[in-house]
Image (cartoon, rainbow, N blue to C red; front, side, top):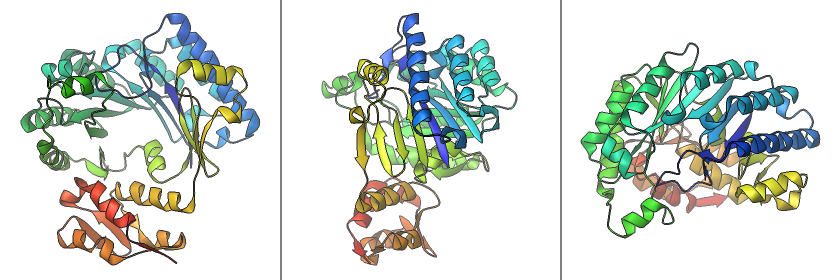
Length: 381
């Protein structure tokens, strides 16, 4: 399966915890320049790889904040995809990320008309003091209004994003957020534990002891959150992602299944023909890259070795509910020593179902340690 990812690098305000390559909302002319460059980048790829984009199954607009794009830019972008052979209305899944402050009826309706059928809303919390603490730009009321608006849209699947283990956040507050979100008619819920990056504003504030994250609460928040969503009818299919029956994100699952995808925009990553690569991450560098005809020597290219491939397979498989298929590893020339994971079987963090290893219980919280042990215990065959 092939997915297309389009990165929109603009945000109304960069959140205090954000470590991505995004930019505060620019002058309007930059939106149009970005759209022109993006179309040019897509056209260049299509010319060099005839028929590839036409074979895509999914399309995902992420960021940043795609919902900030002016309507004219969004229409031009989708029209360009159509001219390159991407039949958007026939794709298996077309997703777009929204933030509450730029989620309004006109933008949502236009996105639907363009072919968007799945919308992911970044809420993070329903507690105003927590939103302020992490530097979010929207209010609780804006988040609720956006959620209500999206849930009213016909033929649109809605995902709600939350974060947990935030500064000063209690277990009760997180479960209140999750319970409230699950009360809406959603098909999908995601929640992610906070990762504090040193170079972010939040990282600096924590380093100065202005804010505090209690890491001891991480496991309790996560496991109780999983249980709550299970009671509400959501199935965990990946460590941070939960859905109603059959409503998983096909685009994201393609990543975890090591399927191919093509990324467009500053720093957007691709995996194609066995190579992982991305264009320059900083906007001026990406602009130069596009205007110069997308030269290969300006791409950051990662040629995967056999060790890289099996390491990726272990990481990406164990983070899914389906688990790690040991027979696929054998076909890759790898046999796992049972001693590398036997302690995790004994302590109830891992189970072996036939030829598959799957995380269970506390195993989802200590996943990194389990994967490290597995990676250190293999036999080439």
